[in-house]
Figure 1: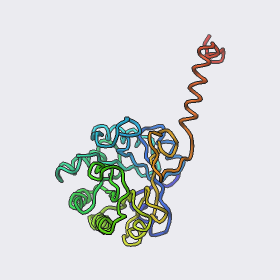
Figure 2: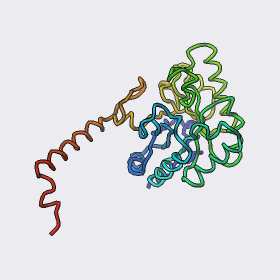
Figure 3: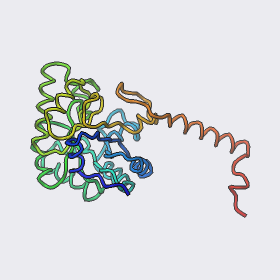
Figure 4: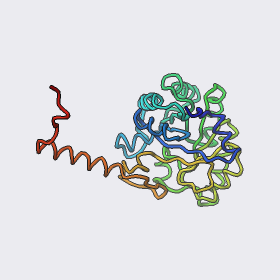
Length: 267
């Protein structure tokens, strides 16, 4: 069996110049496929709200839902590092609440780390979680839980003031003790500068080629979810089309009495 991916191992990958791969998963079957295929990090993202639940954004996702999805993903993973995503209002109200919820991901769901959004404003919370022995992955730039504050899913960091704020956020997340940081929806040049200035790995999504790793939402890259497609997504497959074709074949064969056949029946 391939060597288990660990938090120190992810940090080491940056030092050695090895690119980090990360995809989201929300269930056992797909998690097993990702794990067997060699993905380094499996993020159980609050993107489940959009691509699985059909919500307009991630804000309605609850802690109990995240624990459930993380638990079933963790069962399917032997090699990959499993990271649970802290949903909206699970960590913003206070450090005690944040610490308790972060601990639930490890204790109840079998995650090995958590991810949370925010920079300078969340640095004390990140430090408290890390000090409790819970590895933290940060998230700066376009943070989806702030969608209403941003006025939509808009690229962040194009203006000078935004550029400096996001850089300070990344430095604060590192200083607080995070082992890695997701950099989302920022210009390539800014992501490059962040990656060069901080010692922990950057994992980009819509942040260009210079990050230490890349993450995509699985349902986006497989073509399972097409309500909207961000510019940064590359479609690696058309699973929606394959599923639709298979279902149409099933419907046709049942109606025409071709299925089940003799080979599918018991005597």
